[in-house]
Image 1 (cartoon, helix red, strand yellow):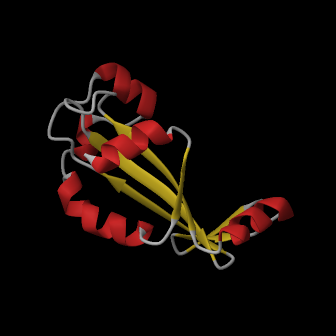
Image 2: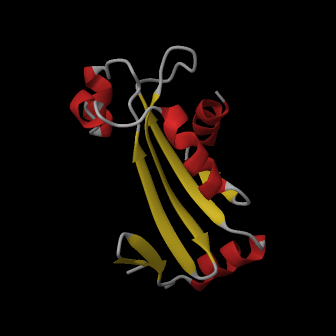
Length: 124
């Protein structure tokens, strides 16, 4: 097992020494980030979820925010992401989580599977 969860925090139990060495080589925390949205159009679509794992000092912490996009989530996107209109109806809008999110990310090396997409939504 790579991760151990305790009190909603994830502690790294490195079984892959090369991964640990890679993260330590950065000399700063590493945040692996993933965004979900209502679609891929920066000008029309909105974020529905931000999830990240922050690695640093031999630990990993998991963060997740559901975000109210203030517009309906298309059915095919809900099926793809598992995030429905009902799940985000009472969630904060992105502006309400941005301060906390960027506080967590401050000083981190950012890693993302689809970084061009995720970073574009962050900048907007």
